[in-house]
Length: 364
Ligand SMILES: [Zn+2]
Picture 1 (tube, rainbow, N blue to C red):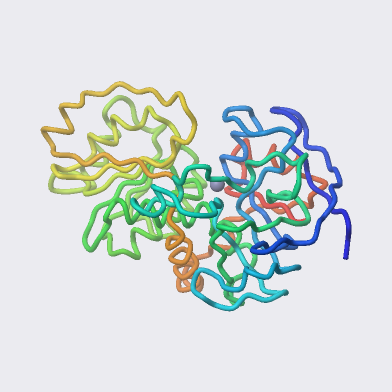
Picture 2: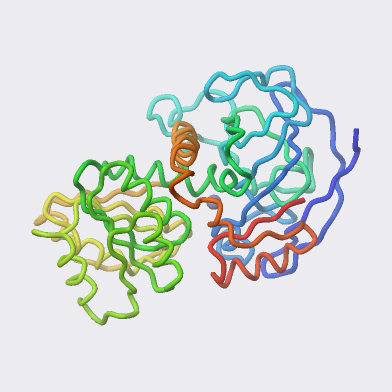
């Protein structure tokens, strides 16, 4: 077998990635070695690269990953559905892993909050097994990871964001209890927001109002089923709240989802809700998201306020099956708007960072 492989190494914040080689070791029990076919650049990778969130250096970023099994350890035999795994299978996997029992995982059904949880794209690269991130030729899939075999029908571009953006949005939509006849507002039409539009419609929402400031993203949201889109830059003061409330008769939205990562939108989002409405925030993944609002609104309007971080492995299955079912109606593959070889990763990150593309991907 190959004894070394290449990775784009994150040496320190705001510095160019460097292509380096690390040794590959044989897989241990319960592990897989995956030959990566594609990884996409998530907003959180960009935050790490820009030094907005701590990430070990040197490291290999990237957690939206797909690839084929190259080596299989003796105890990694089945995926999340119990399907047999074999060398050559094309897979994705949960962005986090935790081996063994845990208070949050076992008692509170929050495996993404298990103590000692580790995440792909968030590990140091200078110690074995080196390859635990997406921007490389290989990735080890560790014990305690939820592995999912990909349908042959899904193109790489449709499959690569499943294990972060799409699964997280399945988790958010479940937490928001979106159902038949709902009016849903989505603050932020990046990749999460676009999946949110499509999933809200699929769950039976009658109205889905998408808000962003980038005209191309408003257009994409309409292609994915938004019944109305609003450019936040077109409004001053409380006019945006009034515009949303006009679209959500008789008294505001049933659910508002924050996936833009800007804390300042929360007070306006709460004002868009009807009495008994649900507000779910999922985009504020970095500390320092301070806001001020009159919490009396929560009481007077009996609002439920919820935060969602990552997802349960069941949401990865839901995301896969949702995209598989809707792929003939909705152009999921077009959401990956640029593709770069590993050697051009610095260019890829610059394009992804300035939001000129919805998602950029990297292929080894
Ligand atoms: Zn992500």
